[in-house]
Length: 336
Image (cartoon, rainbow, N blue to C red; front, side, top):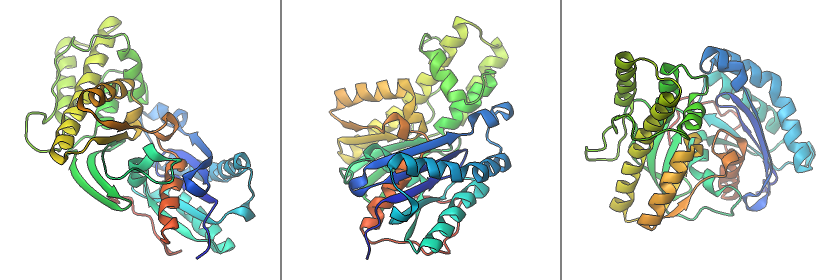
C-alpha cells in the first residue's frame, strides 16, 4: 500500500471552508480557513443554502492557498481526507464531491472523516500519535459530550447533552441579550469585566447522578430573568454575561471532574469551539492543578472548525491502512 503523504484535507461541514496539508508524523504543513461569519451575521445564525453556495465559490481558492503555503503541487499529494459528517448536508456534499473527484482523477486513496473525531483528537494535532487513553470533553456547536478515548476509533461516550449543547446555550442566550452573532464570543468579551456571582443561574443536572448534560433550563432561566428584570445594560450586562458564562463552565467542569474520578483517569482533554472560551480554559487549568490532571487543549487555531484536525485523523487512520470507498456518501447525522 502506497504512502498517503502528503495528505490534503478538506472541511466544509458548516460555515468554514477549510483545507490543510498534513505530512508524515501528523505535521501540519498548512491550514487555511475562510470563515463565513460576516455572511451569516445579518441572519443571526448559519443559513445552510448560503453556506453551501459560498463553499462552492471558495473551495478551489482555499485548496490552492493550502497547497501554496505547504510548498507542494497537486502532483505531490499521496492521499485525501475529507469530512463526511456530521454537519449540514449541502455543505458536506461540496467538500466530499471535490475530494472524490480529485481522488478519482489522480487515482489517490480517500478517507472520509467524522467531524467529531476531528475535534476529539484536535489537542494532539502535529504529534505522531495521541497519548492514549484519555477523557475528552468535546464542546462544539450542537455537540457536548464526555468520551473515554482508548485508541483511534475506540471511543465510549460516557455522557452527552440531552437537549441544548453548551455552544447553543451561549448563542441562544446571546440572542436573548440582543448581542450580535456569533454570540459566544461576545459573551466571553463582556464577561471579562463582569461579576460572575452577580446573577444566580442554574447548573443543569449538576446534582443528578450520571454524566449527561442539560442546558435548556439555563436558557429558560435567562429568558425568565430578562422578562422580569428587563435587558441589562453597561456593567449590568457585563455582570450578567459573566454569571451566564460561569454557569455553563461550572456545569461542564462538574461532570468532567465526576467522569475523571469514576474512570480513575488523570489525562483530560478539552476540545471543540467552546474550548477557545477564556473562562473555560482558566477554570479547567485550575481544576487540573487541584486534581492532578495532565490537561490537553488544542491550539486556538484548531478549536473551531478547521481542516488540520481532519487531516490529522486521516493521517492516523490511513497510516493504519484504512481507506474509504470512492462512492462514499455524506452522513449529516453521523455520531462517534
